[in-house]
Every structure is written in C-alpha cells, then in structure tokens.
Length: 384
Image (cartoon, rainbow, N blue to C red):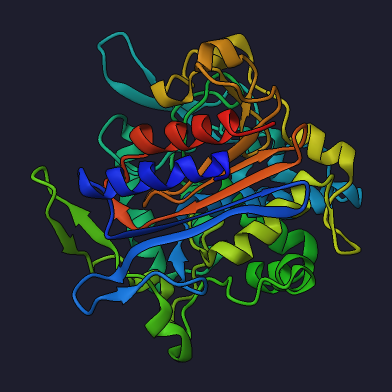
C-alpha cells in the first residue's frame, strides 16, 4: 500500500467527526498522480456522489489564479510592482485613511502615500473585506454585498475607492479586497474583461474547461451543494450564496468568484510547480514563479499575519509561502506555497519536491485549521 493511502482514513474520520458531506483529493508528484480519491456526496439529499467532474466554488483559491494573471502582464513590462496604482486606476488617486483623533474618534485624512501595485498582491493596501472591526470594514461591507447584482469589476473598484483605507498603504497586512482590484487592473492593462483574459491566457491553454465565474445550465447538475455545519455536526444546504454564479451576474471577483473542478485546478497547480510551464504552454517564467513564492512581508507586517494555522508561513504575491518549517511543525520544503478557499478548498505547491495537492469540499465553516495541515503532514510523511 502506498504511504499516500494514509490520507484515506484521515478523510473518512474527518467526515464522520464533523466534516463535509463529501470531499476529494488529488496529489501529483513528478508529473504522476500518486493519490486520487473521492469520498461522500456532492448532494447529500439525492445521494449524488462526488465525481471527478464535480464543480466546486473555490472562493479564495481564485486569488492564486488572479495573481498569476497579473504577473503575466508584469512579465510583459506593462507595470512595475512599485508603481502607484493611481497611474492605472485613477479613482485611487490621493487615497484617504482612517485615523484616531485626540478624542478617540475615527477621522479620515490623507494617506501617507499611494497604494502601490505590490500592496495589492501582498494584502498591504489598506483595503479590507466587510465587517465590524473598523470603520473601513463597515463601509466596505455594503459595497461588496451589492456588487453581484449591480456592478461590473470597474464599477466596483470606483465605489471601493471612495472608502477611506484602514491604514497607510504598505504599513500593515490585512486580508481583504486587494485581489479584486487586481482584476480591474488586468482589465485596464489587457483591454479585455477579466474573464475574457483568464480564458484566453490561462483556462483555454491549460485545458481548464470547467473553470469560470458563472455556472451554465448544462453544468448545474455537477455543482456540489454548499452545506452549513452546525455545532452538533448536522449539515444543512446553504442556498443563499448563489447569486454571483448566475449568468446575469456582471461582477467577476478576482478574490473569490471562480468555480472549478479538482482536475482543472490541478492543471493550473502543475504549471506553477513545474516552473510555470505545462505541456508546452508557458504560463509564467521560472523566475516569476520564484518571486511569487517568496515572502514579501516586512517584520512589522508579519505581526498582522498571525493566523495560527499558518505558523511558519510568510506571504508572497498572493500565496502563503513556507519560510520556517520548524515553526509550522511540518516537513514542508521552504518555498512550499498555496492558498485556501472559504468553503475548504485547498492547494499546496512545492517546486522543490515537484509536488502538488488539490483538495476540494463545500462546507461552512470550512474547518480548514483542522484539516489542511493534517493533509499536508500526511503527504510529506509519505515522500521517499
């Protein structure tokens, strides 16, 4: 029995003890598939099994694709990482930032400097997601909620640019809408819609035929059901998050909008792990892949990048990147990189070992802190 088969009891135990209705995992090493298994149901109610062509909402795994697309344009000399964003998206000229005044009130004033394109890649722009943790988050939330029903990418960034930033660009790290703004940058630099660019430069050349922002009528029966996980382990279908995937939706979210299959995403991961080329198609140069998978955060920014399940990792150009295996409690190689999606999808890319792993599930909350690093550690223990 292959050592990779140790993954199977892990997944079965996970599903039995408060896990998803179904999941799938594909591991490739040196271009060969060493593990490819599917468990459980894409639709628990109808007992529809997870299949190789099951379609998943990959949420923030979209970010790795968006950053790769933006780096293609970097390779063509269309911008520099330290260019002010306002040179390409003028709505971001003269940004403002919230600061606390002497009375403890949050007051907007001029930012110390511009958002630079590098800040979008590294989540150091001062842009946030919606939430209640800051005034920026409170003002951002309604814009993001409205986007799928009434905005395209450019309208979204113009609305977002009206919100004062949470901090001066480049000073801190905060997960947010930076990669959605990269989608707008790609549109401006390429002269195409975001999805048109991705289809032409990434999806079609790599044979990713089931990766898109919208679900077509002919593929609806292959889309896995999203489930909410209750504290007692009960799974309930969640149908409240489907608007962004409908044909009439104009908003193409670079931060979290794509649908994909495990096979499609594995093709993309294989291109990155093999130095940016797969089956004769050059996605990125090896040097750019290396730049992407290098920690770009300063020590000050690393203080904010403190999610416990990412111990040992820094953050590169849109990916976590292993910089300290001992701190991570793992046998990962330095430079191992990837990211995850809100519903539990997860990718791991290790150029040093010529190793990729793609994992898919559809559950909220995802329990990523529990499952992701266990998968990682089982895989590294299986390497010869």
